[in-house]
Image (cartoon, rainbow, N blue to C red; front, side, top):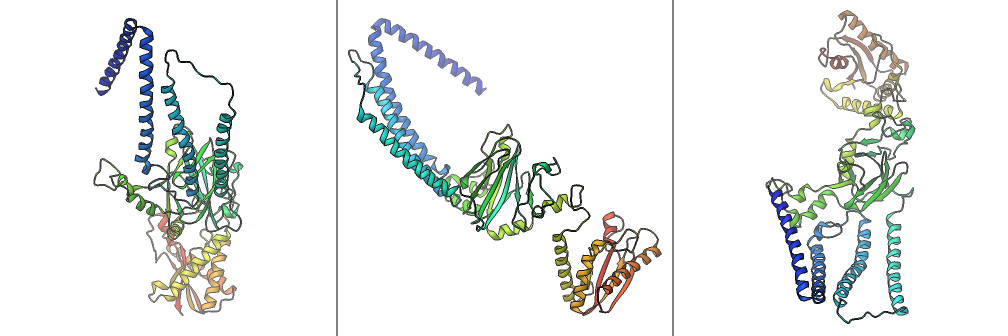
Length: 500
């Protein structure tokens, strides 16, 4: 209904304007066209001056009114080390262009008023004025030279690359229609190799070279996963695109760089304000002390829901808006805790699959991790007083199916175990366990044979401590035998510390 009313009003205004035009035509015929034209020129010139005054006042007042919403002013100061330099450059540029903006508008409208048409007035023409040409050439040249030099100085400070001596966190952003994927280095602090020839849609979208050891601990964040970075840390962002032109834009950090297919770019910055600190800054301003959701007046306020954002600043398609990602800046301690909770993509999604180049082999990192796990379990067992606390499950001792023959990869666990027993000079019991599948007597014999095989391996490694091998068959399950997972848990080899 309201739309219809607006449409009718527009039609009526158009009719009124047409009628006013006809009235003006009739008036000009009655009073003489020359006199009417002179009056119209006077009125037009007057209203142009009025418009100029109102327009300039509106520009200044609106800028002051909305300054707290603009980057670089109010609470929206730069949250990065280099951001203040860019804001300063913009302010200097705004100062000079603002002067030109105001003066040109004043002259434009004032000349329209002063030199409006009047009878018997003649224009004064002059062909050349050296002084005038010098003024409008020299002054802009000086100003432009100053702005260009200052811009180059800021550019050189903002756009350098890192050196080998810099302590830097390097991540990679991959833009595509319509999202950003982010890659973090793992414990080695280095991003692994990527090759376009290794891209497999749905399996290896990044083209990761899984044979590169540096790639195996990399962490990929996809979809809407939050990006987390530590405060006061130099960050280098590799920026690439998978399909069309995108733009990596972090407005609060004054970071903006195109993501170009086939042409990797980068940016470095150092965040200086955590998300929580920025929220506290916003908290001081009335515009942010209002409900974030107008329909929920009792809900959190705007300052409480503030988040840094990663956006695409290119019109990359109809889903362009959905490329927004949340960026959280936290303390170094919080970042380390968050990073420790992330899983390396290789081990969570690739390890053991058909595209794993090391399928069926143990990696150096896995051998080290297994040794750390066994050492920790052994230390806890030595400290334990209760009988159950002194049992160590040997999770990485494997046998051929239905056999007591050790698999090759079991040697790492047993070699580590041999060293721990010899170092601590303890007496132990080695026990074998099976699930409930098959004949009870056969399970008992199999468990005894497996325990004896482990015992013999340790003896061959020079362990001279008191040891015995025992088979318990299916009599001591730790999980239900009704599921495959439970049966797998029940098939195990354990070590029990008898005396220290």
